[in-house]
Image (cartoon, rainbow, N blue to C red; front, side, top):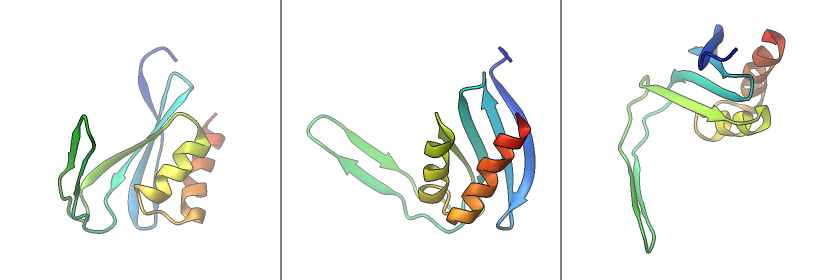
Length: 97
């Protein structure tokens, strides 16, 4: 590919628009919407502080993974997709190749 992120599919899963993108055949990205309101969080350790602001349901989110297994895990944890719905999205990447 060589041209950065390329859209490989656009579909609807769990009532949400899902756009799948591939980066030079080895990184995966999904653009979709937040399923539920997210209150955000603050996390800190000895050397840094991380702030994730609140997001309303329906807000655009981006979920990435370097492998399809990692992407599936992130779709479930960050995107709140069920295991079956996450697998449906992963299968779209597989069939696009």
